[in-house]
Image (cartoon, rainbow, N blue to C red; front, side, top):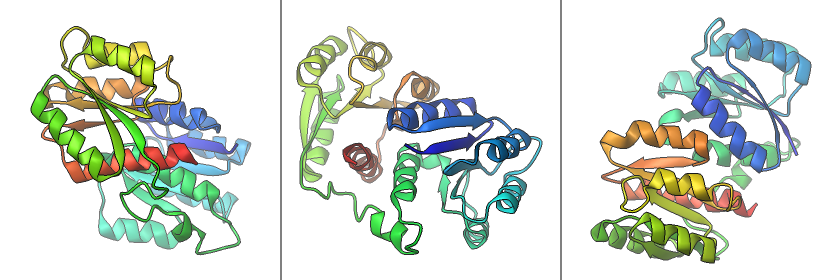
Amino acid sequence: MAKILIIDDDGIVRDALSVFLTRAGHKVFTAADGANGVQAFKNLVPDLVVLDRDLPLMSGSLVFDKIREISKTAPVLVLSGYNNPEEVAAYMRWGAAAFLSKADGLSPVLAAVEKILSADPKDPAAAEKTAPASCRVGSGEKGRVLVADDDRASRDVFRRLLASIACEAIEAEDGAETLALARELKPDLLLLDISMPKKNGVEVLKELVTELPDSGFMMITGNKDEAIAKECLTLGAFDYVSKPVNLETLAQKINLWLLTRKK
C-alpha cells in the first residue's frame, strides 16, 4: 500500500482518483489548492504526488519547486488540461515521473500510478520496463466485457473490437438485461450506454457499482450526455467515451483497465 497525495482543484478528478486508488489498496490524501498541497506534502511525506499544473493560490510549477525543496526524489505525476510540448519537456527535465493530459481520461493516470509505484527506484530504466508494451492484453488471458447498448450496429462494432484485443464480449440491449447478465457473469468490465430503455446506464451503474467491486465501469455517451458522463465518475465509473467512438482510444482504455486490474 502506498501513500498518495492528489493536489487538484477539480473536485470530480480528486474524488474519482481517490475512489479508484483507494480500491487499489492505497491510502489517498487530497488538497484543493497549491498552498495546502505543499503543506500536506510536508506533513505526510507521500510515496507519490499527483499534481495538477493549474492550481489556485500557487501554480503547479511553484508547487513542484516547493516539493523538490523538501524531497529531491519523491515521484510527481503532473496532470494538465492541455499538452504544450515545451512545458512537458521542462517538467520532465525537472524530474517529473510523468506528464499526462486530462483529456485522455483517468485510465492512463491509474496505469501510470501503478507503473511508477512498481518501479525499482535503484533502476533508472524501471519505468520503461513496467510500461504497457501495446494495446493488447499481454498475458493472453481474455477479459470478459459486457457491452450494454440498445443500438445493434454499435454492439456489433464493439464486439469486433473486443475480439481483436482478445476479450470476450457479452451483449445486452437494455438496462434490465444488463443487470441480470452482470449479476450472473460478473464481467471484468462493463461498457454502459447512458441512454438505454428500461433502465439507463446511470441507473445501472448506481445499482451495480457496490455489488461488483471488482468490475470496471465505462460510460458510453452522445454529446448531449457528456456532462452526465462526467458525473458518473463520482459514482464509480472509471472513464467514459463519446459517440462516435474512437476505437483505437477505446481499445487502449479497455486494456489499460484490464492490465491495471490484473496487477
